[in-house]
Amino acid sequence: MSARAILTLLSLLTALVLAGCSPVDRQQAGVCVAVATAIGPENRAITVQSVAPLDGIPHALRVEFSAAGDPAPHFADCVFAGGVLDAGRGEVIAVRGDRGVLDDREMANLRRWFLDQPGAIAAAIEETNFRAERFSLLPVAPPKWLGFALQQATNTLNVAAFYVPLALAFALIYGLIGRINLAFGEIAMIGAYGAVFGIETAILSGLAGLVPAILLAFTTAVALAALTGWLVGRVVVTPLAEAPPRPFIVATVGLALVLSEGVRLAQGAREVWLQPMLETPIEITGGEFPVVVTLMRVLIIAGALLVLPLVLLLMRRSGFGRAWRAVADDRLMARLCGVDPLAVTAATFVLASSLAAAGGAVLALSYGGTSYSLGFMIGLKALFASLVGGAGSLLGAVLGGLLIAAMETGWTAYFGSTNRDIVVLAVITILFVLRPNGLLGRGRAVEEGRTTRLS
Image (cartoon, rainbow, N blue to C red):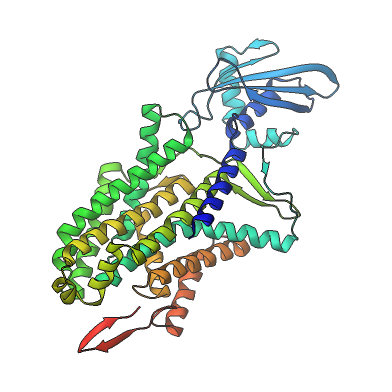
């Protein structure tokens, strides 16, 4: 990726971030509008005039509105238990309206008979003119079919942002030592927990701003998984790097079980969830089918478009990449030329674990949660993505990750998520029948009596 392309991408990302920044929390705004319908004039439709932060009070909003047939202005002030990263983000702890502050009994009734009722807030918002703030980026209105295609393309990139790094992790290890590490899914799970812990650390430390909190989440995820990868590389991978394939596979299966069960015993079997973050919708194009993304999705896609080409460039142009290729081609000759295969293997496992962690962090931040059982299915799909692209081929891993993401997104768009995994795995099976060596794989060649992987 050229410097001009990187600068263009950064400029676009900056514009999107600035467009998505708002002093009003989208979720809290909807709750306060619903409160306004409850404390406003009875049996009269309300029209929201404005929603703005309440000066001098943290986590507080004021909704100004009018009621049908009533020329007088009205307002509702709502104070919430926390900010965007806090567990009390959507909990209203105080309300003030035209008739003053609601007392404890009135607040208890408001919560019990209105706010805590399933679907009540959404139904109340629908009765008003309030719609969540949406930012438009481009004054373009493409045809409906093109808008649909662009929307699915952005959805595909978001899904690929956690499949491609994990597929690259598999390809890095297989391309180097010809072995499949079946524990990368669990390392991605550790990365997801690291991202959650990073967000919680940002909350407890009072770190200001969502972007620093997200950067801390990714840093924590990568650091935790890199440490895990270094330990696993020293204890499991390096001793078995030149052993037959069967002991290596058995060892990594056992490692996957140890990691998942260890997390279950340490954190419990329940899922861990985060508050939704950066969910402000940004309308890229208008028209009959507007293309809409959230700010979180923009950051994830932009980060993937920046980091993944840099990883490929590292493997192609750097000294480490040359050492990796030398060891992959011939470990003995690489050792004779002064390259330490064990050091290269350990460094590769740290890099691969960091990529797996990045994929897990993306998954946790995109969908808001993680669990100890997360690693199995995403690890299996990422392994298939790596093999479909071509075992040991880095470009093939990228292509395979994009292919699986496109299949999942396309099926979900037309048929929903029901039977999605079954269909994707069936298509992958057909691809293996048609292309046993993968899309970019070229099999093995015999050179000077040795089998050399060319993929």
